[in-house]
Length: 203
Image (cartoon, rainbow, N blue to C red; front, top):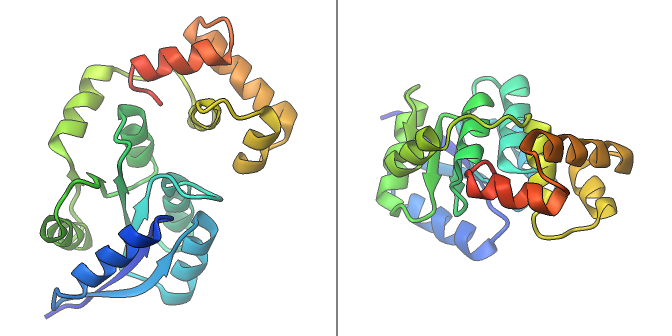
């Protein structure tokens, strides 16, 4: 029997611990490392070289898609999957563009998740059917990945300085991305841009 080495990354300790305990019941799955932030997930992946990285979409330091992008470049043998409670179409499209092999809502059972990890390890894809249908009906976003990321960070009303720190960008660059996003969406300001993008399922 092939043993699948798994990295779990989720900033919610309770969820991460519960997943690790449940996956430990599977004979062929071994959780070799856990992480609570994006940078920690990258460090753990470099140290332990898992077969599959199960990444939360929203983590401090770097989101799951950003981590998946880095892993694709640094550890091409590590397949990635996103587990999220925010399954918006824009997130799914970003994830697939980054080479993520599965996109799964946190509502899946541990047994389903174990099966999806095996599917991903075997080189196949899995996208939750409802998320896929939503993505198709939402249409293509005119925003770039960076514009989408910055707009998502602005969604809770965070000031430019905080967005810049979280995205590892200069404040001027953040303002440029917000302005470009608002212009593409025909919005008067960033708040209107967030509202429009949310209505269309792009953030």
